[in-house]
Length: 172
Length: 207
Figure 1 (spheres, rainbow over the protein chains, first blue to last red):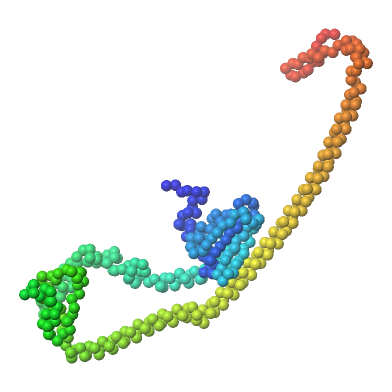
Figure 2 (figure 1 turned 45 degrees about the vertical axis):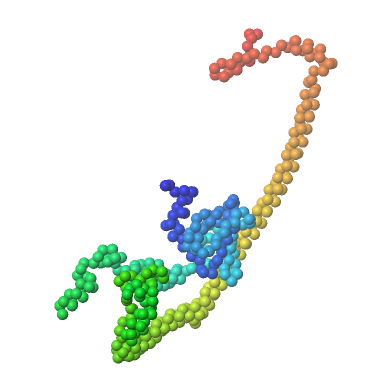
């Protein structure tokens, strides 16, 4: 099945995961006002076309709205919790500049992201066993090269408890 | 005997079960109240496993100590987790971090405002330039229109003068006869010849 649309690469997982704007927890709503025609809105149009899917993928809980041809000049507006609003003017800017700007003022920095990744790794130790929802494996029988689950294939007689008990009893 | 004991087996069982043990009631489990007791289990009296009193005393003591210890450990660990969470959210470090966050946020907002102001200035300049451009273009258009009008008037005047000039050569009723006479006296030959090189020869008749 061929890819659909003008730049179908925007729909690939790899592209979406490459997005590097992860907003701080404060940001709740993002609004983009831009125009469909005009040289000054070109950067904003490209930003909406290329970067918004990445941003939404990385921030699934942020509401993003696009408004077209409502104002003469393009801008971004962020609504943070506690009611604060941040206005970002993007008239005449390039889409790369816009994304850099937004990342600088409202994105999580590299150290914060790394610290969070570390914390997540520490919380989820691969050596722990338990429900599939929280851990990798439930039982050692799931690992390749280990004794298979006695529920599916019966153990050889020498490994069963009752045989061993019988042997121990007969030896005494 | 078995059919007799079918209905009032519980009371009879109570009398018979004098093993100094507490009688355990039958729990139906898989079966409902209307299902009959299984044939192999008809006369069965369930009693709990036997307990040695001396052993029990010692065991009780040890169990109570063990349970005390495990409960203490459990609560210790729970408290540690809760304390960590509390520290994380409302400890002194957290306050520091929150303050720093606020500071950084303020700084970034200030920087953003600066950017906005810069863009605002650029925009005002651009709009002013555009207005001036529009003004200039309008004036030019007005001048051009003026000039064109003048040109038009001049053109028309020239045409009128030309016509006046031509009027002198018109054929009127007075010089009709004269003109006819002139035309008959001077026959005009419109024929001409052209050769392959493009040379035009106006004089065709041998005169």
